[in-house]
Image (cartoon, helix red, strand yellow):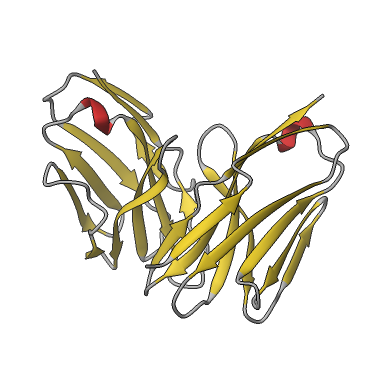
Length: 113
Length: 110
């Protein structure tokens, strides 16, 4: 397996624009996580899915953020409208479930100017 | 609220030194503790420590879980410049999610 695949790797956008980040988890993994990493706050869990169903989205900072998982092999994280404070590295991770390690994608570095 | 605290926040050593990184946790229904290494991009998995196994070792890296003190340490002996990275500690919280500490940034000088 190629591991968790995220796209794009880098995204630079202007404030107010819509941003969509994409993730393909490892085949067979039933848990998917979206994390945001900044120097100040470290790795923050935004939302996680189990069997394609959002379980906990309490980490999503605002209504500007939304995430979907239409099937077991694809998830998106959307920010609309984007703001400069959204600039961070966004990671997607997947796991086989509790008591199993999470595998991370290479991340998307988002810069909002 | 479940949380993970790591120390020190950063560390600079010379090649050949031994380092000890710390992770303390507060979590309801502890099940496991995970260590990750993050170099340039994605965190990569190092160890998982569970209630049934309190020590793991891989080459120059080893980790011990102290359930009494609600903590874990990650030891790296004979450090190399390639060990320079952010080391992250995580614990499962609730049913599925993982809580991460802010990490320890290790810099190994040649």
